[in-house]
Image (tube, rainbow, N blue to C red; front, side, top):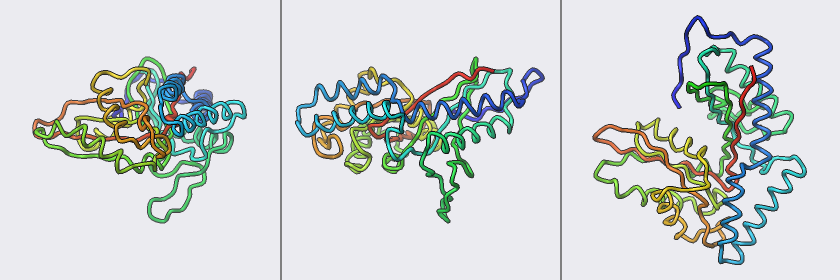
Length: 287
């Protein structure tokens, strides 16, 4: 999603009432994402458990599903690594694209950090000083696109999976190497991203755009995969890494792909790795 510059005489200012609504909606949707996995993700993990032939892997998948039930019952985050907040907005034409909008989102992140609670994960990249509230320079990561209503989508990203993500600037003649790059990415990752994983794959665009495409692919429903996605998923699963790296049939639950046109002389490819806790949630903000 590319930043959107909004101008116009009909755009509404973010007054205090709207500001407070955005703060609350942001905090609420983060809480939703941290405690409840989407139904399609839970169903995909359950189906993987049903298909799994390794007793150890089946037991690990059963433990994951039990963890999800306990998180919901206790109203606590699914994982101790509550990640960093990646946020996607859709902005209708009558809502102003302004500093106050982003300030409200940041205040919502601060509110969620205190009340959910979230582990403070955001630090300065060099000094490693913790900001204490999951905000800071460039954080949260906010992406905006036009829409019919104001929606907030949150995609928490933990470090174990994010650290295993990769990007490659392939040549057009290397199109057949895309599955190899994706599989190699998971082979290097091994058990570190807490498999079984969900892989978001970006193909095309530019160097920066393809990474965004890969992350946005993780927002897609995982109930079904098209033939190309299924082929990629099957190839990754042949690695036999399995749940928590202990072996088994299920290394990846799903592979989702987003594409964009690219330069005739380039073929960017990115893989954004997500652990078994593929957290995401969306809300429409009443304004």
